[in-house]
Image (cartoon, rainbow, N blue to C red; front, side, top):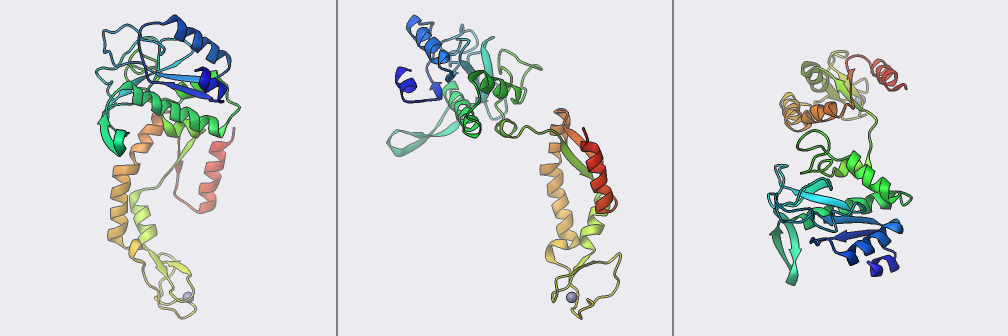
Length: 269
Ligand SMILES: [Zn+2]
């Protein structure tokens, strides 16, 4: 820790866990006094283990491990000191001798959180130690019982939320049949590039004389396929942001000016 402090480290990541040690406690205290962020693996001693150090020191951000299904890693330590959780099961990582390996443990979760903290400080170097901890916890994706709990702390570190604290998410609601009509009715002129719509323009030639055509990605089948992909991959975001209380639904039917006015009215403080 002395070495890290002397060399200007802003974050100390600790991948070791054991009983309380007076010397390490002193080092943590001195490092905390310098305003340095400290992150530690909670340990891999399982549900019955007492809190291990240095993670259990109040100046340290204690990290537990989750698996791909957002369940707690069975061997992860838990307790009132856990601040946050991060992926730590079957993590694909570099290994000695230029190899790779699948590894599990809270050490890898701690490294993840340290990396997040580093990106955060990279963006805003003025952030204080306590603020880094507070933002990490405030932006975590809640897991387990609602609110902070002894398994996941505030929840799983959320990389996206941490960097972009959104005020609102606008959902433009337009029935599929209208979207299909809008897109599949588009006709383009290959000569001058002007776009027409079959609902306003019935001729098959442009005013410049070019013969209108339908682009491949405007064809009915393509549009339907795009909407199916939207259903599967994008629609879940509506529930996600709705749960966070950020979703603002706007009627997307009408002219661009009408829709624009609705969005503006919604965002007024
Ligand atoms: Zn034309």
